[in-house]
Length: 222
Image (cartoon, rainbow, N blue to C red; front, top):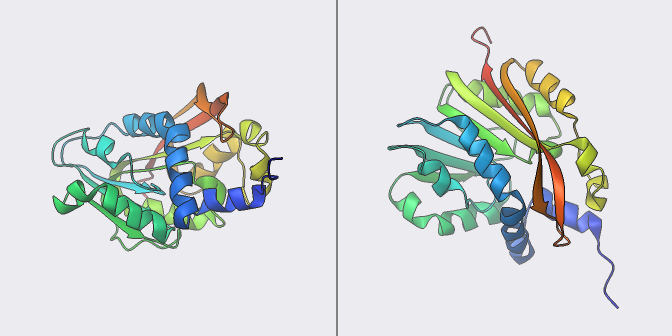
């Protein structure tokens, strides 16, 4: 008989992949979230010389995709998991050694970067775990250059409520709620895209996920 699934433990690893179990979780997330992450990167419309920040990159598998978007792009990934930071540095050793990428630990609210550092900032499927989203969005707005682009990508509340582990510590959003959160945090929304896209669930079944991509600029007076 199969052991019952500890969905609370699953949720904890999705929020902060840790140890050997977390390394495996991150690889599975690459499969389920890979196309969603690449689409978010595409929406950034990166230009040559851009400095790009990814919040919550996990094991950093998509840093190379960011770097492929132009010449002299510099990628920074920050994660709350020490396991993921260490793993990402190993996976991206070539880019790190070349000075094209760095990976740093953060507590999720405080970021060790100066004002107006980044041309592009994005994050995929991390909003659910932000306990103080206004604080985190204020930090993102601070780090983003005045003409920079921020892309927030999440799965919708309607889809996420169907998953058994989201009952443990996930904060879910409708597209309208996520958009309002950004507006109230000093962002000007440029586009909101919703798509129903096939992906592979944790149970290794294909499901159709409603994915939300919100792109925005910081307000010039904020």
